[in-house]
Image (cartoon, rainbow, N blue to C red; front, side, top):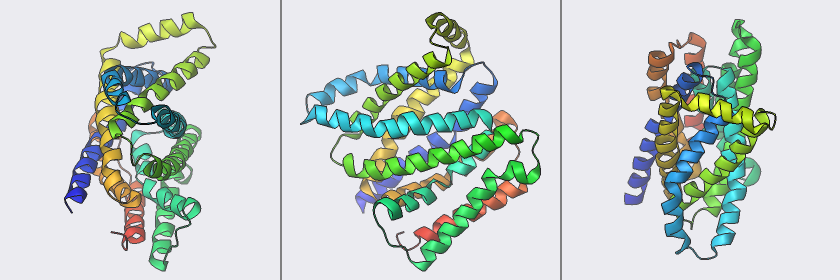
Amino acid sequence: MRKRFQAYFFLIITTITWGAFLPIVKFGFNGSEITPFRYLFYRFTLAGLLSIPIIVYYLKRIKHKWQAIKAIILLELIETSMALACLYIGLHQTSALETNLITTSLPLFVIFGGIIFLKEKQEKNEWLGLLLALIGTSLIALEPLLVGSDHFSGSMVGNLLVIGHNILTAIYLILAKKHYRKLPKLFVSSVSFFVGLVTFGLLSLVEANFSFDKLSQSIQTDLSSILVWGVIFYAAIFGSIIGLTAYIKGQNEIEASEASLFNYLQPVIYMPLGYFLLKELVTPLQVISLIIVVIGVYIAQKKKK
């Protein structure tokens, strides 16, 4: 029981740091010329530099260290590289509110992942919950089409990319629970920062048409902005080091599906913050969709809870 309460404590920390995360990043995107790839490159560069002492400390204590690092790199290519690329490109094209609302449905994808990869059997109430959560997620993703948004094309593509992020993250969480159980969580998250640094450094170079001069000029412009520095600092410290480590540690003590339930506490953070920073208003359809998602995931998880 004590371990379970400790897991809840760590997951609440993650809920707060990650709930505020996307509105803050979107605020930085709106106020500067920074791109998603360069933002992620800065974020992981800072986080990686800060985590070097952690890596040095654990390298002396982990058995079969190179096998462990290889496993971490392969898994983090799914989450740190692929899933985050989908998330932040999607965020750049749609609103922070829609992005957060869709990521709130992540437990739905974790359950589907359990069915597909772990061959978990589902009861009637779980299938009903999955159906409701799927309906709610679809309503959020298709809202630009349903309400005739002026930014239909970008919003739809952005929403679909965020759904792609959910799928990749669900796969990652299921695999991470198995392969990261015996590894120090600070070491795992620290290695992941360097995976992100290399990935998004290369993608930033591709974005600059392989021109180091052009990339250098863009970096100088970005880093001359106090706003960009603030977003990078929050992302590196709270989003990466604190948030990710707390989540991995929290979900290690309880079921992955139960840990994912904390995702739908995040609206308490991102809805008011989105209005305060971005003036993003919640529409009736979004509220209804979110309620459907939360009810669906609750019903699907009721037995396990």
